[in-house]
Length: 160
Image 1: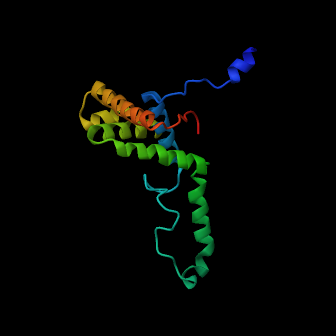
Image 2: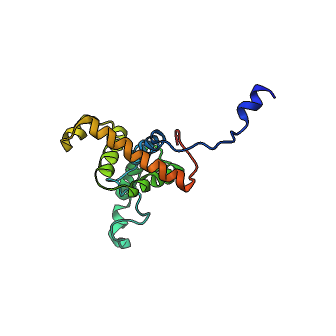
Image 3: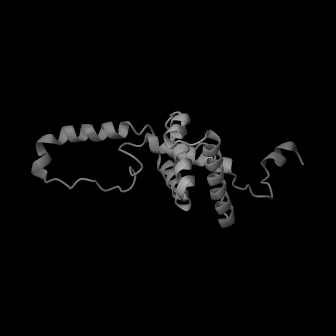
């Protein structure tokens, strides 16, 4: 068999989730979240407007300003595609499996990395040792990886 055929042949053993792959997916999820317009983690909670719908008479004279504001909001999105948002939501749902410090530290780590903030600030804010923070982050990611492997979830990593 040629080398090309061997390289393109799927391996018999499926890839398994590791704590590093989970951390990569959470980083990507928070990176997508950062590019979405709006405020905070609830940016994609609903497609319906958060404010009550206005009557035609209320917006008739102000339509250009409303249209401009909407385009400015979406211009800040910088290309968040629907499949990226779906993968972001999937990874964010994994955080529901954690509790306590594991949840707080893993979420703080992913947020800091994706938003290009210093992790030392997050560590100082919580008043803990750096090794404790990173050990807890890895333990939480491993807990998620184990659950994903137990459920037989296919590994999908890399750039979205």
